[in-house]
Amino acid sequence: MQAEATAMNHSKRGGKILSAELLSGEQIQSAVQEVLAETLFIDIHTHLFSPAFGKLGLWGIDELLTYHYLEAEFFRSSNTTPDEYWKLSKRERADAIWQALFVETSPISEATRGIIAVLQAFDLPTDASALEEARKFFRTQSIEEHIRRVFQIAGVSNVVMTNDPLDLEERAVWLNGAQGHTNFHAALRLDRILWGWPAHWKQLASQGYAVDDKAPRKSIAEIRRFLADWTKRMRPVYMAVSLTDEFFYPDGSITSRILGEAVLPSCREFGLPMSLMIGVRRQVNPAIRLAGDAVGRADLRAVENLCRSFPENKFLVSALSRENQHELCVHARKFNNLMPFGCWWFLNNPSIVEEITRERIEMLGTSFIPQHSDARVLEQLIYKWRNTRRTLAPILANAYSLLRNDGRGISRQDIQRDVNRLFRSNFENWTGVLAR
Ligand code: FIX
Ligand code: ZN
Image (cartoon, rainbow, N blue to C red):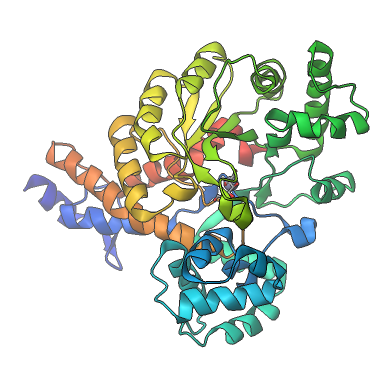
């Protein structure tokens, strides 16, 4: 009763509680929703590009419809074979996907529902005949203004890109002095170097780095020189790699050696965290290309070994398998140089995000990063972050109600501090992203 009385006595404006006073049960729910809506998030992992990268940055309805999440669902709901599909133009593919997933059935999957949410966000029609009007709308958008509007609607202030120094198209932009962008930050993605070395060492050799296929000690020093050059060029906020479910450390492989002897020392040298995204099974069905990757349970003792062997390094870790989530939380309780982040890819579905986030709050409090969007198309920021706010509101409110029932009241300021930590300062403190 005391908490209720106190809550009722303090100043109010427009029904929103303004003071640090303690909230009643009902007020907690609405305060959490408001604070989540008002807090601008940092999206720590996307495949978006700033305008300086031109066509590498995907946006608009045809890109939204041909997103590999929808392609995977399309091949389940259409007799079109992958071969026939890839012969179509981007527009024809988008037409086919719209017909199969938005006309011939209800778009109730997370990915298809997302498209509807984007159309609604721009006050566009969402019925089965909406495609042409959507195309007309996106044709009239200028990219800089459109980015500002999408970030504002999505409640996002900054996104981290995925930048591959061995991608020829992207590399050309960087070598021509890619214009920085206040809202887009680089991440040095090292897949082709860490697990693609046999196929890609020649690219480094052709750029003047004295390396060879066996990556002996001499090559390790040259890889570090390569990393130093690209760190100066990209000014990344972290280095990153995605790893399969078979990844282990240490295992004597070239991946293990380059990671332990070149990448992690360079991360320490430049004060950068290492992001490990673990658990993909690549191309289990190559016929459907990007949609052809799957998931496998990984042996997270690799993460345990890395955190223990490299206490000076910081590890941002996201595991793809649902079965790895609990042990990832336990490892994070053992190693404070481990920051679990995101409900990656096949986990980015509200029912699973709920399960993972509840467990993380119970085991880690606010010392984790709940989500990243993994957006490949600009407007995906809108529905991926709307889903995250919608899913997290009741989970956070429930955690605060339990705290209140156990005898400690909660104020709006407390909620603002915690939400800011979850979606901004945990990452800012680890990367100094906005201090640069
Ligand atoms: O490795 C990654 O960064 C993955 O997120 C992507 O490869 C994947 O295709 C994707 O888009 C997941 O959402
Ligand atoms: Zn990704």
